[in-house]
Length: 210
Image (cartoon, rainbow, N blue to C red; front, side, top):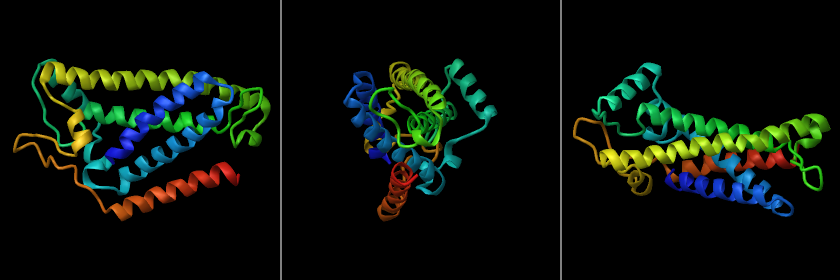
């Protein structure tokens, strides 16, 4: 899962660069978009059938838990969590939802010159133009979410000396004894590759067969 996270970061930068460059770079923009869609679908699927700490049910909590955690932050007390804290969990959900919508919209877009998404032919030109406009503006939503995410990680380290990057790299998180299992337990690699293969085939079918 850690490699998926960092691949998504790399792809996000690549999508921004190629999207701003335009022209023939749009070919690579679309390829990066297909790759991002594949990884987003994988992460969503992994949130239901993956390793224990990667499943949404292990870290996504309701509004009360998020509010309680926010109040704890305001009081400068610290709740420890083996995985994402309640606020961070909703940031994960928001980013995945935004990326899924953005990638899906990209399938229907066109640049009014040479390039169009693989599903643009399924909608009218006017609708494709509208979706293209929404797609271009959608980047700023994702950029804002990403900046908030990065800012929160930096703030945790600056004010609490809590390094949130280390677990993303090493798969281990240092916690008090009563805070839960710090191990980011992994499921079978073969199973993970199988889930990823299904996502790859789904995106391939979507962009080549519809």
